[in-house]
Image (cartoon, rainbow, N blue to C red; front, side, top):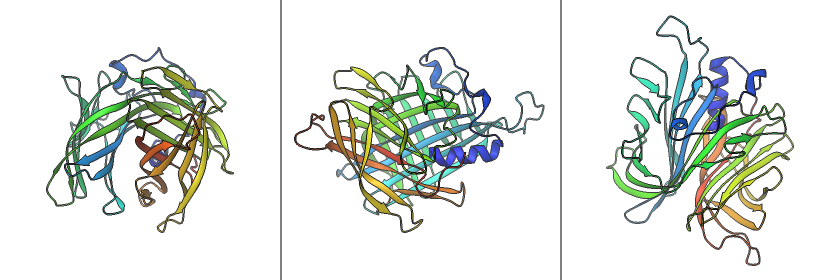
Length: 359
């Protein structure tokens, strides 16, 4: 969904992702202050993904994402209707019983009490969809539509994971391509889910939250990216991504590894290998996605496999793109490697395989 939002945000704002004002920095990240919105930056998102199980043990993948884009109107514009901030929300449920994704989305400009995001704390909403930090410390996520409804409580079990250089996450060799980026891994989830017109049912599981804000997310020669966020059963966590060129070669790769004891290591460019193992061709778009991967970084090797193959997001009608975004499992890549001896659950995002992302 990040890919779709970046494309849509550029169309609405009328400004390129790559610009001369992409380099300004800010003080080191502070919590809870930086959980809120950063309205002076062009693009921002709060991206929650995870695995759920119902009372019978059936698995589901879920996603709830809120996006903010600095609108084309100047902040000093006199009209209350001026689009200073544009907000979009997306909710999806990966249901292996149906073999497809159920999803809903909302979009609005901020104001009039209908949609807003606070800068002093995590509190963003579009109509009755919301993501907020409750007074007791937990996160609450709600979204409701005809296809699905989510009412989830997310309890933090670990401190924020600062990605890149203490939150400064580079996306290429030019330091102007970056985001401020932190994650909240190993969120403990409980709540209720509804599919279609059926009755809501109880769920529990584990989730991951990414929060990023940027002026220039990708360089001119990147056509897409591969990203994963993994919660390990022993409490470890891994975020890894790579930016790709038109030939499928890695332009930049990075990540962060936190082991079960809480020791954290930033993985610099070139320390992570994304090696495709098996691909799948979408019957809807014809795009060919590498769905199984061997993921290697110093001292570790994992095999990523999807919950099911058809987790493609076909948003050609609304945002003009299609991409794959779904639930995956991870296991040791082979019996002789030194990879963690535990399973992991998380999400995988693959963009630029249908067509290059033109920023």
